[in-house]
Image (cartoon, rainbow, N blue to C red):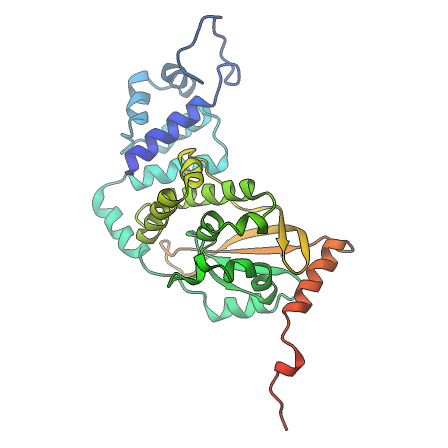
Length: 303
């Protein structure tokens, strides 16, 4: 799917979910042929002509100012993640020469520097994973590796000559529905994160291949992808079911870490899972950590 299609379907989907009452518009009691707002109503709310907004909704976003996009975002009541996504789509629609140069840079694979490995290994009482925007897990600490052991053991992951991919495991391995008791909610977050990444880096060949694979194989992913939901992953709570310690309700903090000094350097995402101190959840997480530690007999003997 091209950038113009993404723009069109995103704007249509956001317009369709907003009622006139929610937008503060007074309409008569007559039958409305379309769900949500009409194009002309969005144009009025954004302060642009109907011709101009229709042009935007057809995907002709090249050259549109940030002020106009911001006005449209306000009219459609977009949240922060959706605003960022719309701006990313606009940037991707810039002249071909600049986007080709960006595409070449984005194809480079980002590796986890040694200093980041040292940092996450020093965190012993929380589970840590480092991933890229494609949901490839590139590094973990010991507890993070233990928490995600069902993914690492999955034939869906081990059978692919690439880093373990959370999205591939989540949508293609039935065992993922055991690992996440609220599988539907977790899967919707993953699809939204991939949609956000696709807006940010539309020329990422590996990302496009992954989305193509998931859309072809998983009807559920295809449906979630078509919803055009986007998300900024920062903080929240998530429940896991682990085969050794049972259910784990954990809080998480997620942040992007820069991987270079150039503006085009792609960030890595670091997520830290913790349990509330003094709770059974903390006891279960500590137990998982102790089970994951190498046994003393596995350590080399020195003389």
